[in-house]
Image 1 (cartoon, rainbow, N blue to C red):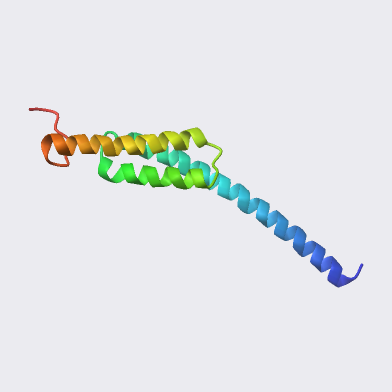
Image 2: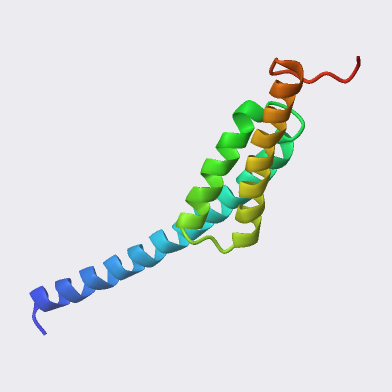
Length: 104
């Protein structure tokens, strides 16, 4: 085996290991996005649904596009983000403002 062949073999092995590391990191990032989407969608039902709802939807869609292992959590985040916008629509049509009102 020549030095050039050895260098090619070593380089291709390093590239394969780097690609596996990138794939693992991408999956871990997608899992984090799924969890964050779920949490933001849940919090958005109570406060700042005008901001947190769309953010939860976008994060859930990105997590699903990246093939997350936490698919159920990403789908819940998507559903909660949509629910945030539905709650916002009811609040705006009911009171005419984008605010919570607990009293009369």
